[in-house]
Every structure is written in C-alpha cells, then in structure tokens.
Length: 238
Image (cartoon, rainbow, N blue to C red; front, side, top):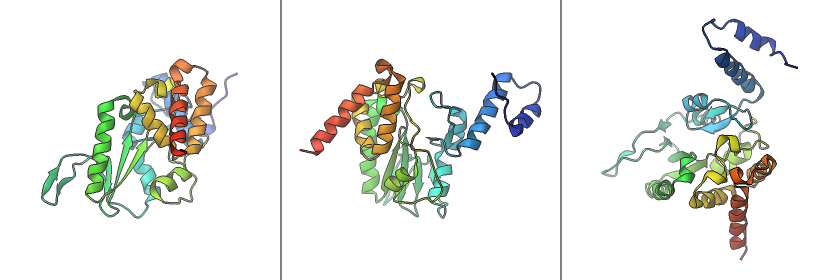
C-alpha cells in the first residue's frame, strides 16, 4: 500500500507548475524528505555536483558538497580557494589545481573520486602531487570517495572534533548499483583502497558487510578488497 508523503512534502507537490514532469516531482520530494531525515549525505567535491548526482541508488541517501562540510569543520576559515592553480610560489609557477586550498591553514584537500582508483596514471599522479604540495609547505588531506565524513573520520583526517552529528557510520559508500565497488577498480586502485581503509576500520567493516549482503561477488569484488586488506595487515604484523 502506498504511503502518503508528509504534509510539508504534499504542499511542495501542489505548488509545482503543471508543466513539470511527474518523475521530476517525485525525485524532488524524495530529495527533500531525505534531507529532513539525514542532513549530511555522501561527499561530493561541490554542492553543485552533489545536487546533480542526486540520490544514491544503493542506499537512497543524498549527497553533500565538501564546502558544506568544511563550514562546520573549520567555521572560522573563509579563505578556501576551489579548483584554482597554485600560481607563483617562490618565483616558480605551478599549474596544478587542488580541489580546496586554505593559505591560513596551509592546507590542501583533494576529493578523490572513482577515476582515482580505476586509472593507474591518475593514481601515480596523485602520489606525485601530494609530494609536491608537501614540499611547498602544505598539509595534504586526500578524501577517498568511499570514506565519508563521520565525526571519527573528521577527527582522523583533520584532527578536529565536531560536536554536531555528521555522516552516519553505519551507511555503506560502496554498492553494485553505483558501479563503484572493488570489482570496477584496477589492481592498483584496489590496493590503494585497502591501504586507505586501514585508517577507517569502522567504515571498512560497514562496507564489507553491505557488499556481502548484496550477494554478487562478480559485481562487488569484495574478495579482492578483503585479500588486499588482509595482505596489508600481515605485512604490518611481520
């Protein structure tokens, strides 16, 4: 039996012009209901890209732009530079474009999307850029697409404790409908994913549990990730 939307959602529906497609109305209402239930969604580089991506197919959760997270993580910082070249530093011109940069914090933040785990040349470039930025005096924080900004993750990445409850730890980032599982990554990407999950064991467990629940080893590639994760553990314990 269909469940009627709440009153505030029905009011939104009735005020829509008749020319708007029914599918658009449904997506709009679902998005607003989702935002009411969960303020913080899956991370995207910007709010514009977050809204464009819409609702996650595996979980039904919306997305949130990184700039919105940064407002609550660093409320006193207002000098964020997004997607601009470094320019002239110590008499040398640098054309690389970090996702976010703060001169007050001497901090560079990169959001590493799926292509940073499917293309070996991009993976290599990321390591080289991190070395470059650090040589110029910046702290570099890379946020993988499969790591969400929970309160624990924010503490791990930025050393900041946020009182407001952020992303929920029990929601998986990976799913077969999103085509973002280990099955779709190159070997170097799976290794990189396993290495980065090491710093976020709670999120690793959440994602492994969800992938296994989807019961499709070909599309989840969960065994590839578990194997790499186990191998890293064994290497560290030698």
